[in-house]
Length: 487
Image (tube, rainbow, N blue to C red):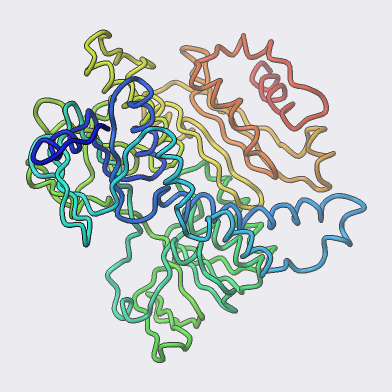
């Protein structure tokens, strides 16, 4: 932006159309979309540009898991079994992970911001009343950023540790340590049966840890169809991991700083591990961003409408995008919301287009409630979009659930000997469209977008009948599901 002098310089330099707090994928996309539509934007980040996904979540975790699933697939293909029988080279896998995490340096992402025309301030940002953000920049003091049109809070979420005796002194892993560890622990206890728990149990068991997975509920992946958790649990057990459900941790102790830790269960039983990963939930990073200056509760999830505008703030200038709004805690959903928000802010700022906030409108994040896709990168993979059968029933839909054995599809048999998997579609009988689809099996993540298009597009079942799957591919399961539905 143009440089001037004195007081005028601060006013010009620090006033933008949009101020974004948080430079993870969500914040980057809000700023990029707003800038592409003609607005000036600045983004503030206190850690690494690229956020949790780039350095401690999506990218490093999938870099750890890809060699695991590739070897598992090779072991199921005639002619490759012997070649794939050797243990994984853990040093090579960890080095591969380090590269995908950019060695925890954000130079490349900072360069991208510059190339995209987005200004960047490194520091800790706090709201200071309407449309005003104060940034503590360390040795450079403070910068005051004023937004002409909008401030977008994209600060993400953090792992939550339970309040257990001895836990603070036991130095537990959270998702960050689990994805960035530089050596393989001989014994790893994983507490929690959600996505982080099962993915990290899969990765570290394959890399050489003896994993014990401790789950308070009755099964794994409780937000997906029950068979997803069942098939993943079977596979983990076959890998050598111990899966225990219906157990809770009551205390943890680590008597020596570099020694093993002891996990005490609610039944009094104790088990010893070299590291303990707690994957038991997330909390919003909103505790120290000045929410109290605009009438909101520090540390709270931010409630929004479908444009991701915060409902508790007057004049509609504050947006909460990504994890902080608790709509769908997934990187791709945060980026989707960001595209919606960037377009909505630009439309409001330019006054040339009325907001289209109806169902599936250009300025409504409808997919957050109707068509959220997710892949769990275990072996087998679990992939789903939309509602589960139970969710559809609770929502009052009149449905029919159609299941099919994925292993009986010709493409699956060619993909791997002994292929095990399952597919389910949930049909809305009143509209004859799909409410949800779930696949479990090797490589099903690449099937998911077809299901997402069907659910988000509300494609009638009769039209899906004309979408011919190529033979012999695993996607032929679509034909089998439709044949089963038609009877």
